[in-house]
Image (cartoon, rainbow, N blue to C red):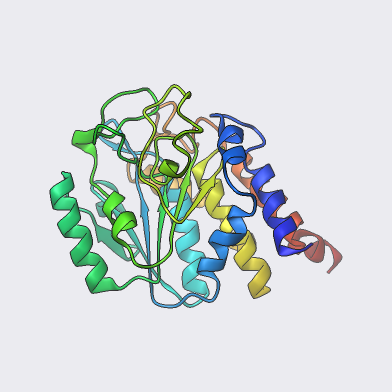
Length: 284
């Protein structure tokens, strides 16, 4: 399968369920967006900032951090130096295990200063956002229920808008960083759409799965079955033990957006079949 054919297959697979109208978002994007995004990460070296963490109640949801950890492990295995950018309590939860860039800014002015300083210090080769709330037109953050969550957010948008390196964003509903790229197309959805854009926007039924799509292409190019090493249940268990909740049910369960882990594991299997690794393993 050619790279572009693989990208198109991934793009179709990841919005197949259409849980939050991401088929509409897909139609607004130029085809091949997964390929274009993955090419920014191909052979990458140096620091890669991965922003994640969507506040739910007084904690964080499982969608986003799971994908961020999966991409972190992949990029590290391929020779990059990833960092996960997030605010507390997620930053505190991950700090013992991962390189963490703690976000501190709680308003736009402070965020501009923080982003400029951190980007200057780290000189990242890429910045990725996975399920990070994006600023709406009124300068506030909203969840899918329309609730104003600004007081519980730490601003990451400026890391995307100020970056001089490639920027990639993954979202699944329209209120995440990156959705500014297709703001007009999603204007009719029952959300407060985000206005922050990026170089390449990726959409999926669950944002974690967008990270898996990137990993699939990186796996193909490296000849390494990187998806086979993913253990989503173990990561969910790790996150739940540190206080995560499902973004839909708000319960401390081993689920993502109301779905059991078997759904994500099936996506991984489907991606491994698309990249040929599942077939190769069965033939050995």
